[in-house]
Image (cartoon, rainbow, N blue to C red; front, side, top):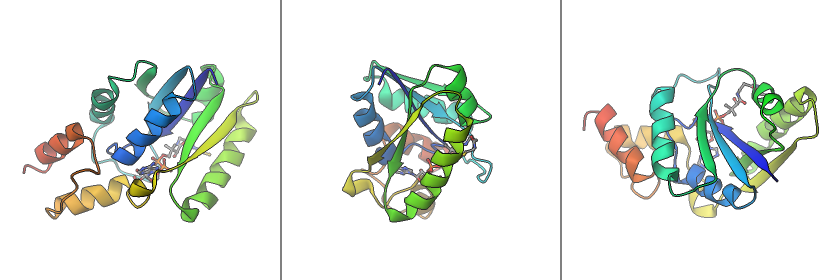
Length: 160
Ligand code: COA
């Protein structure tokens, strides 16, 4: 794969996402991490904060670029020579949502674009951005589940 896209809300990035970014970056020449908006979600961090945190923890990965974009994922893919879209699967519950999105996106691509599913590493299979924020908000321990830069930003935002 020459250029792949890994898109998400990343509100905030977790070690599960980071693990996927590292593995995906070995499978392609250039990986674009796209910070997007999911219409069903109201983000806690601004898109600028989300981009900054991801850049902070991927700066040692030379072929990874972090950008922010709005609109349809398929439009970005069509306009930016993307040949594969990376998605992570944590458990069977992700499958139905993912297959629906993959089929809809495939209809919207104007060329052959593969959706590549990577299985999440088992130690991160139970985490999500929401669960991490919730546990942190009640002073629960989330060390080891998010990058250090995220822990710092969560402390700042929650004023802890
Ligand atoms: N490790 C840890 N958590 C993970 C994970 C992993 N490997 N993979 C997914 N997750 C979590 C995410 O943190 C997220 O948690 P949250 O619900 O608590 O925020 C949850 O699983 C769902 O992740 P994902 O499926 O990637 O959703 P998303 O909201 O992050 O991203 C978009 C979805 C932005 C890619 C999708 O809505 C989109 O493409 N939007 C653009 C508009 C568009 O084109 N719509 C038509 C689509 S067909």
